[in-house]
Every structure is written in C-alpha cells, then in structure tokens.
Amino acid sequence: MAKLLLNLRNVGEDESREVGELLDRNAIAWYRTEPSPWGISHGGIWLRDNDDHPRAKALMATYQAERGQRVRAEREAALRDGSAETFGSLLRQRPLYVVVVLLGMVAAAALVLLPFMLLRG
Image 1 (cartoon, rainbow, N blue to C red):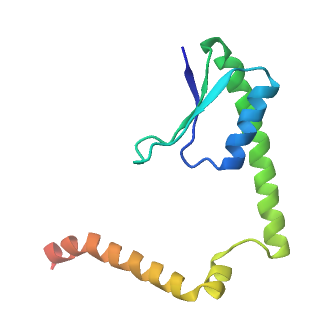
Image 2: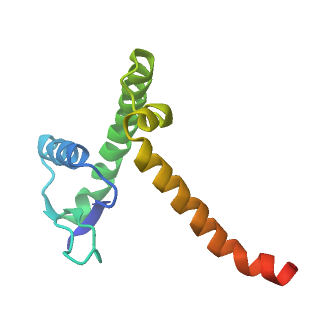
C-alpha cells in the first residue's frame, strides 16, 4: 500500500524534483500526485511500498538538513552581495505595491479590532 512521504504544500518545483531524484538514486519506487484544481489537495510524493518508508524518511532527514544549510548559505551570500530581496529593495522597486499592501494590512487589522474598540468605548 502507498505511503505519503512528502506533502507538496509550499514545496518548490526544485525541491520536489530533487526529492524524486534522491528516491530514484536509492532505488525507492515512488510516484507523484498533482494538486487538485480547486486547491483541496496540494499533491504529494508517495512511496509505492510501505517497507521503504523508514529508509526514505532517513534519506529525507539528511536531505532536508543539507538543503537547509545550502539555502541559508545562499541567502546569506545574496544578502552580502546585495542581490537578496529585502523590504527596502521591494519598496524601492515597487513603492505603490508596498503602500497598497500595508494599507490593506492596516484595514484588515482595523476590521478585526473594531468590535473590541466599540465594546470598550
């Protein structure tokens, strides 16, 4: 029976591809389900054989630790050389977008807090 190894919610295409390659290199049979068109399911990477699950989980733990270190190092390098997207760089590139998003956040917070303010006053 199939066993879910990785839910693809918030997983980038590169990470999904790397996990598939990792499973292939280690001769673990797997398949991928795609996200539903209505957003109910985000898809996943499934193992065909339950007996492979402990070994696949161990491989995933190692992979995720290595990926985490690599991504953090890439982010730090991008921050050092100035190519990373930051709030300041986004504000310089798209000021109208940033202002609209901030106003939307203030409006949402006001709508949430308004009933409490009315009850208090």
